[in-house]
Image (cartoon, rainbow over all chains, first blue to last red; front, side, top):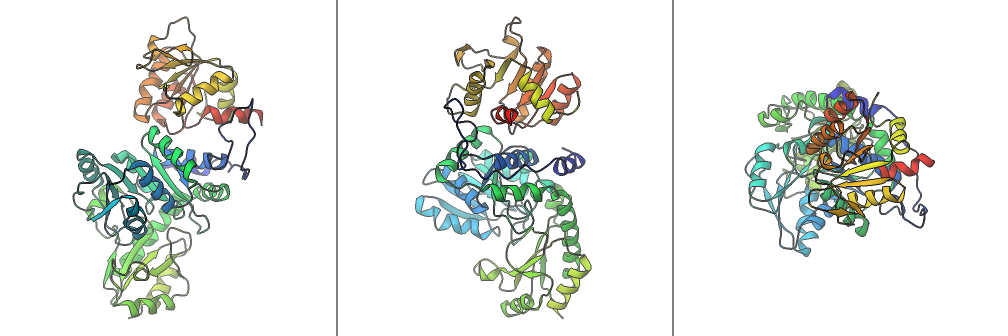
Length: 349
Length: 139
């Protein structure tokens, strides 16, 4: 799919009405494709059709990214299976597996995704890892994982299918926290899985119906509405993020900036732009808290990918995994000079 | 023939056809391909299952490939339940056997193949499910 076709696909057409019905009547005493909302609903169907088209696979919506992760692991693996999760990626993924899912027999190991994946039943990659911004050599990692008999999940939350389509690189599943750049407006909680194979989608759909980890029609509608501007948002947010990353890298009180757009040669082989997310380090936790409080434009809040920029010290959530002075910045659609003025003043120096 | 998957195209495929060859129709009643083929039958369509591993399905003889369907059977629609990277070959077969339309199921996405079918004069629907589109006709 060329860029032009994708933007056209996203922009055209009307978003369907929000059908909130939990039941649809049988016809000739036979349940139709929609009969009970927990199984499937019309707005979700449209959202899944679009997500499947964008990523080139078979899509399923879930109530959140974490819900999607739970479904993937419990539906696809057996007790005793090992999951190798990219180190420096979303801490909630590792935490979920290490605590709740471990109780059901899941083993989890962290690994450096810029190298070869370890032996595991499932390898979990995260390009532009949140918040350490590492980038795997996707083709090599998928080939190595498959050669060892593992299935590969790529969490593509940060980049979106506008920038990267992991199924084209051989991944078996793509996962999105669709709450982030896909929905894009900090107002809809959603997850999505896009499967390379239809039979995997059927298995996950069966699990989803039984477990009830389902997306609500209103959230799915907001996703469909938000996604109309996805290509534009990704382009602009990536461009602004790159500019801010460059300026931060030259700033005297900033110790380190993590953004693949600052010369990561592997990332440059896979993507033409690098998404809205970056992280940078100030001296320590105290200094990080001072920056958080000094911001006036950028919201001191969690999450990422929305039209409004957000920043937070990640050590409050994952103190053993990140430096105490690490600040994660998700760049929104505000003017780049306004954002820089806010950041430069808050960072000081 | 215009564009694929437009509301007009979907309506025409669902209202102006009778015989649907279902490529990749599974004998497993839990699989989507089986359930949707059964629904098409219930809606009065004639279903011609295509699956090289099965001899009879849904009360119909099952053929190994589209090309094996006897010429007397006029296939109106070729409904494709195969992986996206295999879909193109079945689109070529659909053109070759003179089908009027090709329908690629949810997640079966091959823009180039869709364009080839359009160029050959077929009606084309892609990334949609007839089980969901049929009830919408009544709306």
